[in-house]
Amino acid sequence: MSETNEASVESIVMRLRTQGAGKLVWRVQDKDDKSYFIEFESWQQIEAMQWWADNKHRDIYKNSELAKVLVHSSKDRLMQEAADMLDFLFGEMQIHSAKMDGRYLYRFRTGWPMNHLIGTRPENAVRAAMREVQEQTGITLGSPSRKENQ
Image (cartoon, rainbow, N blue to C red):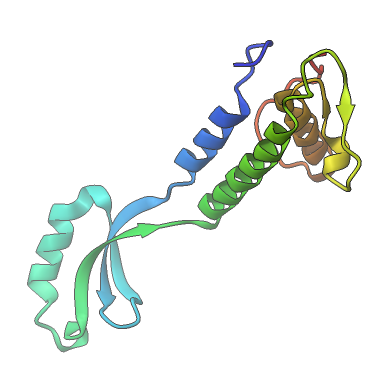
């Protein structure tokens, strides 16, 4: 945790990855192209197996299989992408952590969003960039404070 009891960038990345991990489902799908006919939630395993046992002999399903599949929604993919971006940005800031000792405010002027990496520590600089992304796009990336720790 940072000095203001905010969630760390690492914990935000972990939450994004966890929330965007997708969900397991059971699908009756084509063996070749994986297009599916019917889908069951993961907790419906018994119903899926029973349905498959009752219907697999039908001609329409002769090239099909019952498979457990991990499905990612567009929201899941967006959370994974946001986690990757934050992880990369924080990693880049860690390169500068030796000089970011908490006593001085550093600004990196190498283009947006690096122009918004302002802070005394890597965590603070990433939070400043997160706030800027939120203000310019309306996308909420976490719960950064409005006051920079200096």
